[in-house]
Length: 145
Image 1 (spheres, helix red, strand yellow):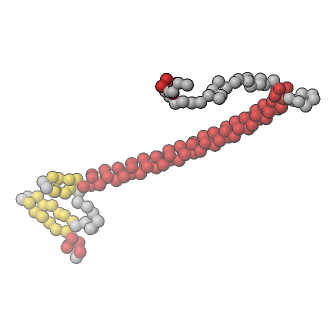
Image 2 (tube, helix red, strand yellow; image 1 turned 135 degrees about the vertical axis):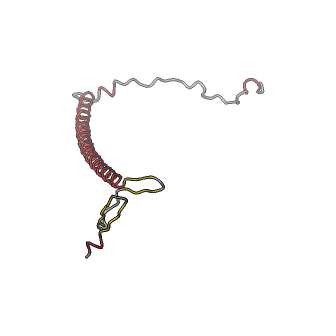
Image 3 (tube, helix red, strand yellow; image 1 turned 45 degrees about the horizontal axis):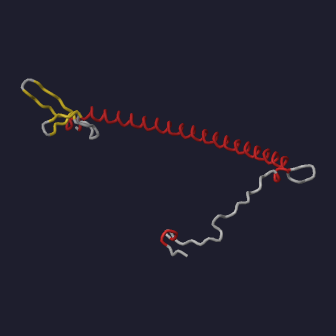
């Protein structure tokens, strides 16, 4: 009985076409809208293919970003190790220079040759000592004594 209700016959001239109603989940393949025919099945397939391609691209980008992150972490670790080694080397060099300076300053008697080898400051007399400042034009226009 249901089969009889679901199927109908349409007759055009000499051609008979039998149609059977499908389940409600089936989609119409061709839709005419505003005078344009749209193949919805092809559009849906294209959309699904595009979604799958976008998901694949996103997964590839995520994997690439993770690889770059790991590479950067390794590079940062390497730089930190190099910096630490350079600090150790610089500290060793400072200690060596301190030993050399101490050896240079010491003599057998305990006095410093290096400190005594510095030249003394020159004894220069201040040329303006005891003179009074009379202003910018004081010497030209000031009172004569």
